[in-house]
Length: 245
Image 1 (spheres, rainbow, N blue to C red):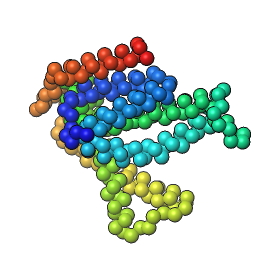
Image 2 (image 1 turned 30 degrees about the vertical axis):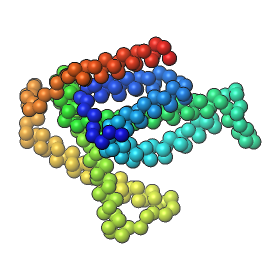
Image 3 (image 1 turned 120 degrees about the vertical axis):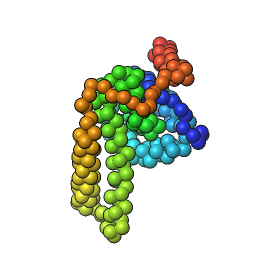
Image 4 (image 1 turned 90 degrees about the vertical axis):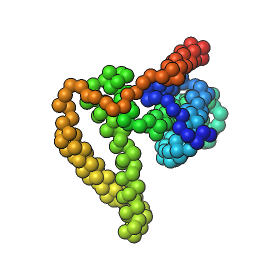
């Protein structure tokens, strides 16, 4: 594992995410999907301890959805080759392959996005969109705000949870108490998010955002030779896999 972040510009990482997404959406085999997921996890390990910690937290929540989804697909997808029979329930090889493939695909798509967000500064994403892809800066800043709100919402969630613990609120028991607790929790997050968006909107109006058709930037995102090599490697390897596999 590498302790420091691997220095890649946002565009080359975005090309890598797109290539992995194309591969994940193309193949239906559980073996191929497992290999793709393994490559994504390996990339997360290469990016360092911080990314690994983020992936660990995200994976715990992802498993809460992925494991039930796997068993639902395993039980309901029809097939011809029975590998196990439990009374009226038939577990088939085709259902096992499909359930494993679709579950690995969900993990791949989600984890690639998490790795990109965890290793990319939202400000660099804006610069990449406006300077390299020539996207209008109004749209680019909208993307930046959406990327910024994801870690902010996570931080707000932890603050509210800690506040409830300091106030001596006991953990909810039963379905009704859990629903009520989540209702209070969601309202608090929603109110804080609306207040923060109003503050950002007021600050943007005060600074005259959108008054001019173009903007100047203190920082410039340059396409280096390393970035070009990585882009060619991502696209080339994707075409090779699509052609031969």
